[in-house]
Image (cartoon, rainbow, N blue to C red; front, side, top):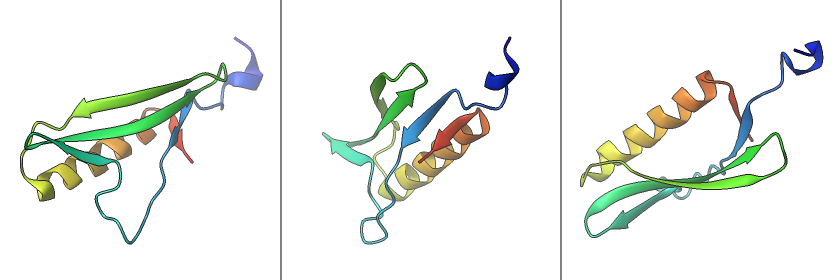
Length: 80
């Protein structure tokens, strides 16, 4: 393994924080909240991700979104 890649992130998330929209990255599909975001990978490709948060409660959806983003950051995915 090259030492040049040891500190490089696995990928980066395209997360835009909008203080005027606390529901950014969330969408409601027939009563169930989903999260959607884009992952930019090291090979210069990108992947759009949509995952069900498995809740109908908006407050719970926001908490699960924040927890997911924190977990991805801990796993080495850099947020931009």
